[in-house]
Image (tube, rainbow, N blue to C red; front, side, top):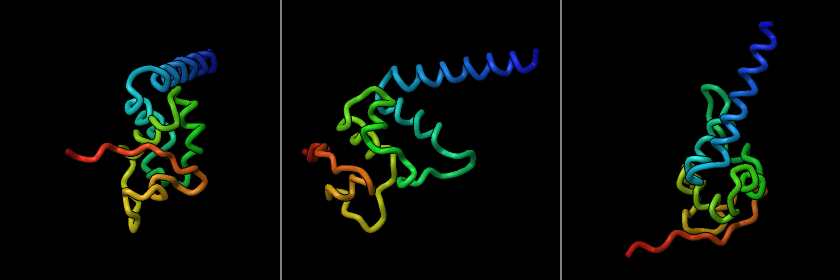
Length: 104
């Protein structure tokens, strides 16, 4: 009986996580995904992230939208020009063409 209850709770938690990854604002979806991927009490290094296309599929969004969202959520990489295309593309990622609009 305890095993069945634990399985039910796990299924409910997973369904709730999937719902949060597929509905709402993309930034909120990405925040939830990063929270799920981050080890308890740890930090998620950029190199540990799945490829950009996979992240976009998980949160049901376009690659460019995910690229912009991650740029706002992840800290800038030290020693890199934040406006460089290579700075926006961690190793293994294709540089995306998204750019923030220039300040007016």
